[in-house]
Image 1 (cartoon, rainbow, N blue to C red):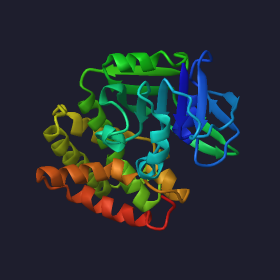
Image 2: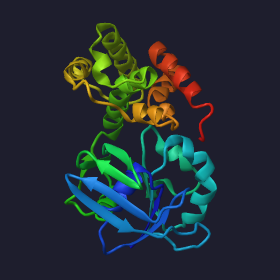
Image 3: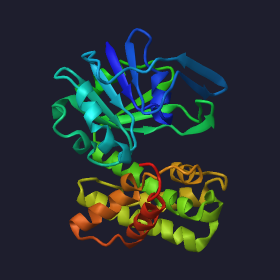
Image 4: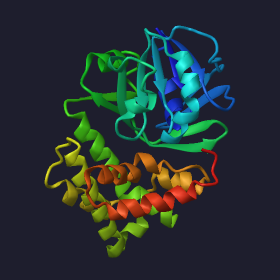
Length: 291
């Protein structure tokens, strides 16, 4: 099969080295790249690559899009060139209703929304360190099952979720519970040991549960308590992707995390005061960044 990977940041790079060697892969990225290097469990995976031109048609069977939420607007014209009537599309990023970002470019039945659990650290020199085995979750469907066949299962796991809406909202709430606070303070999770900050985390979670359930999710009654306990017992050295982006001077993907809770709160008329505040403050940290 002919597979395109659009976006060779941490997640795009991690997925690129996991595709079965039998497939022809085309690479697309804003900045120049000539190799992909991933360090995982002490093993370095290195692949020499050549970026493809979006103006050249390859009639792709699959296009795997690994962009942050704030990159989609500027990428739409290029994505339109790459998606043919036969192309299936996998959207791999944080957020809700990902299909809206490419609405009109592809038949909705050929698109899958994927959330990925794959902590990756940038090490410089086009090298990333993958901290855990990758887990990709999507709605149980024949298109997702086709997607699964593209990969080497020795390095990635898949979860076919019967209730993807619930699983996706849980991930957003988990990410939002601490990520925004750590990004604002600029410190790792040792600050979460402060009882007052832990109360803020609990409020973020509670607001998220309220809007998630109104959106069709079915989050268990003990989810709040269990998540707060997980935060209390977490290592003080734990960071978050939002904190990493803040410290590295990169845009923060707030609209796909606390911003989702905030926007859905407005949609349903539910108060999400803490998520609203975090969203406003973190949006201002992005004002002068290259989004």
